[in-house]
Length: 437
Image 1 (cartoon, rainbow, N blue to C red):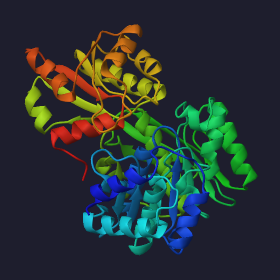
Image 2 (cartoon, rainbow, N blue to C red; image 1 turned 60 degrees about the vertical axis):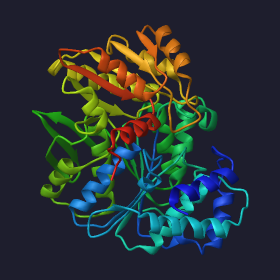
Image 3 (spheres, rainbow, N blue to C red; image 1 turned 180 degrees about the vertical axis):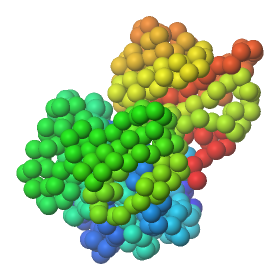
Image 4 (cartoon, helix red, strand yellow; image 1 turned 120 degrees about the vertical axis):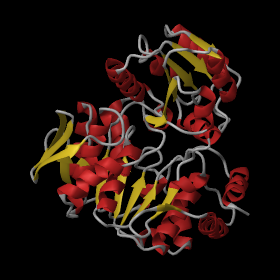
């Protein structure tokens, strides 16, 4: 079987969703001879928003400085392979279908049908792959929370990084920022180095307390390192000196915080990176589906040259405020009528998400999410958007929503933003024919 068939077979056997604990994955990894103890040094990244972007910056910096890097992120956008990037020849490549299918089969056979979640199996697959392929570093993203996430079986990460924390997954992690921060801080191990990205005070205090309890060395945004934009340049400063860099390739003011967190994280590892290598990293960093512009593909061709097309997978109110601020910034440079095509999962908070876009977008077309059965009904989502003061209508599919725009026959330039869920972004990239590589 190929990867898709193997994972579908696992999904048919094991329950969907999350069941946060470490017992099952610990048992499975022991059966596999504890591969997590045989992998290159790990940078472990938790947080609510910005985890993937921070990992993308870390990868770009390490590769620009000549290092081979394994990368594990979740969820994927189009293909399961996106979760596993193996460091080869200084530039990571997604695991091939043959390599990934073999690892999944071996892990599933070792588990022998015992109770477990599919995410735990896929985390074990990551450890197996990373132990069997040489690299200099592993970048590992926490799936959900931190304390009981399957990736937290790691005993001695080189550096732990915690990106901005906001309300999300409250049913699993708690209903306050402080409670969620406590779960995220669970990745901190005794004696490790910890980089704390930009945080609200109540989150930072909880993370600091956990780091101090573990006698960890702490590097805090705004205290131990700082960053800002000056004259169109990205300025980073810490005890090691000042970096004057080009603005990052990733769009949005929030990406400066993610870039700074990544720089602090790489410096905490002790890796030497030249100014020129940092510059290269800022120019080459890539992270699909996060305020990215689509310039080619089937959807782009259908809409035509009058549409400026963007995608962003941010899915909670804090992410929505960041996206809205970026749209406001773009409108100061080029004020365009903006339509959002939005799909969301039923585990999210659509009302708080939509409120961020009042007076920012002109119209919303809600759509079902094709790649998940947990999507909010498009008509219900449109009603929530209307109750939030936005002009919204529902479409029966992503393709129908695009057709609605095509039929408007707009003469002037317009902006469109596909947003609300990484699953929707995945649907867009798949239909556009531009999956991540």
